[in-house]
Image (cartoon, rainbow, N blue to C red; front, side, top):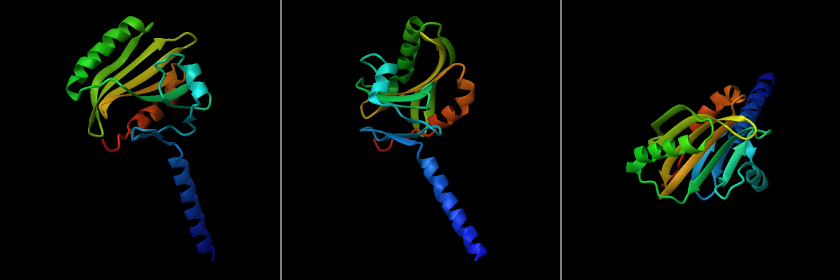
Length: 177
């Protein structure tokens, strides 16, 4: 009897842990793209996205921590991005960012392979209106368009969330083309 009770407890605990783990998986509508976000992240409302990104180029999908000081934004931009032009596009992004982003400090710039797909990887810190920020930007072709991910955190908070954000970016799945 005691053995059966322990067995049931373990099954229930396993189910609970599986539920918690899967609660952090998000799928971006109409893209087939999914990723695992850090624990506690939830999807931002349209109003929150509008407040955080007050431009017509705001991302369509954003998740964040409860205080919204760390976010993961994803968007499928209408611009075509040929796979053979990634190095050129990366150089273009770098040149433009150097010109338009206040206080940019490059941490890493490279092309990387993620689950068999080539991505532009740009990591930087910069000054924003109210705080310094740390960004990791990933860009790749997807369905004839340009898929952009931005992992963004306040510079002060980044050390505490860095491991979880880097783990999250490794889980990006493009699904079927």
